[in-house]
Length: 438
Image (cartoon, rainbow, N blue to C red; front, side, top):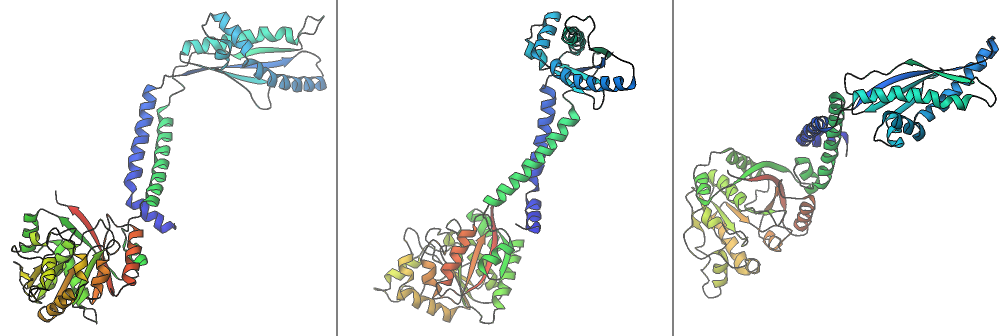
């Protein structure tokens, strides 16, 4: 994935990052409110040695004190000293629990020890820190006093006593907000990457072009409506969707070979192209050319309802009757309320696929060629039915409809292979975006 593509994906799904950012900030605020406050009190100890007063002895003593300070830091956080503090203060805490609240660090290149104690009570934190210092001093005296001597080799002095903190050390809202926002953005970006990786829909013109190798038209918005709403839409064809189909008409009519019979198919079994076929037929009829739309997808028989066709034999029934009545298919095309537009419904309850490869179907198309300027044949999905391959031999060109909400790259690639393996003569791919009317 190149930088440009990644940037486009981020722009498309910026709302994911925005949502996770808000969640992260919200979580930070909640964490701040529910986290018990902790207070830290600090004290500082000075380590010194007893001995000579010459410069050499002083230097050696200073080095000795620094080494001692490192060891003392370990003792200050030990369980033994923690237990002494707990006993001295009468706390219901174990030595390890007290030691876990203590932090001791040596100030670099000095003989100073910084000691911090954190507790949920500011007063208790200061009390533990001060008691810890006292207990520590009394604890190391025997350790530093050689046998038979009265003076310790090293002594510890309290430089600064601990005072109760006026503000909690944690939680800090600012810190929590920074971490929450950073985590929210990071999680959002990861989700965008995951969604982009898993989402195999063909939603971009560039994607469709690379998969099909065809000119890509659209996008066209196909609004799913009730039959009454659909008839009203077709009778008053002034919507933005209508203008998009007029542009497709211009493209079709500008093709040098001038396709008269146009096959319309989709790339996925989930897609129905009957609405697209009807709209394209209306657009072609608008150019003062007699047009007929032929429905062959028996899985979605809606053209009769959309165009208010009279109750009569459908395509499948008429083709089946040609053996007994040679003229059965001659009067199939029924007029619609749209000028220059007739329609043939597939019929209900019968699989049309076996009849589409018959001689009767070929004869019907040839007869319709003589009566109409354009034939728009609505076919089942290319990858899901063999009907498209059969019908492609009767047509002059094929439009592959790609619904950006449903079509996956694998489906489109399969449909293209099916069309290339037949006599489909694809002329363009059309991006559509189906949605239901609210």
